[in-house]
Structure formats: C-alpha cells, structure tokens
Length: 165
Image 1 (cartoon, rainbow, N blue to C red):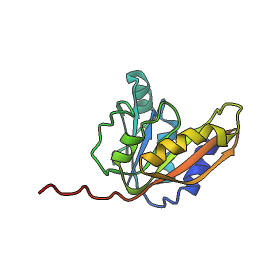
Image 2 (image 1 turned 30 degrees about the vertical axis):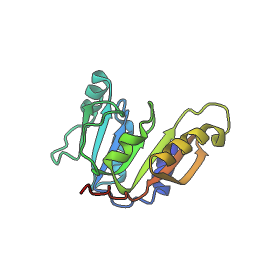
Image 3 (image 1 turned 60 degrees about the horizontal axis):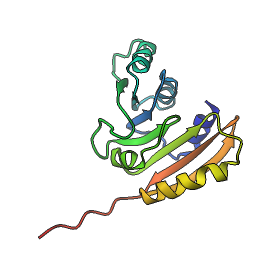
C-alpha cells in the first residue's frame, strides 16, 4: 500500500470528484482511495465476478453510495468519456487508450507495482512511458518505495477534432 499512498501524495490531486480503481481485486485500493478522498465517488472494476462480489461485501454500509464495484475490463470500461479525475491501476494489463478516454483532461493516471521484478525501475517503465506518451500522457513522478514502485502520469489536454464541412 505504500507505493499507492506515495503516488497519491505526489499526484497533485487534492479533491477529486470521481476516482476509478482498475483491476480492484478485493477492493483494497478502492477502499484506500475512498478514505484518502472523503468527498470523491470511488468506483472499482475487476474482470472477475467473484472478486467484485468480495469487494462489495467489504464496503459495509455506504448510504451515500460513494464507493461501488462492477465487473469489467480495463480495455473496455463501462464509463462515459471524461468522467474521472484520477484512475489507479495496481494490477492487470494497461489499456492506455481506455484510461485516456475516461479521464478528464489534466486527469491523473497512477500505476502501482507492489511486487516489481528485480530489474531497475527505469528499465521496467521505459516501454510503458513510450506507450503512455503516445496515448497523451506525460510523466509527473515515479519511484521505488516500500518494496514496490509507482508512476504518476498526467493526461495532457485534448485537442478538439477538426470539424468536417
């Protein structure tokens, strides 16, 4: 959890309205984000119906509906465009195009690796940075902490598509 906590502190996100945790597993990351951002609506998504069910069971009473979980995949997110201020992914395969689609311009993408391989962070993230840059993201912060690593990316503002006449 230390890499996620560090990334959130370095993200520059202070009071997000909506937060998404991708591949949320049992909901640990989503629950942490709900505690960290008490006014945000936090959504968790996971491909496994069983894991979503376990995550839902952990939310307890939530009369305001601030936290919710649903089944889905990072490559096909069931949310509208420009919907989230912050997207967090700590597991699974990254789908930069979908993350960019659901993030608001200037939104943040936090990638966390709680159990990184032995190679240095810079080697692990080199390919990821190029792929994310092509998707409109720029790196804000990254590092190794608590036996894991993190990367914080910002979605650059979108350029409106040219009008067809």
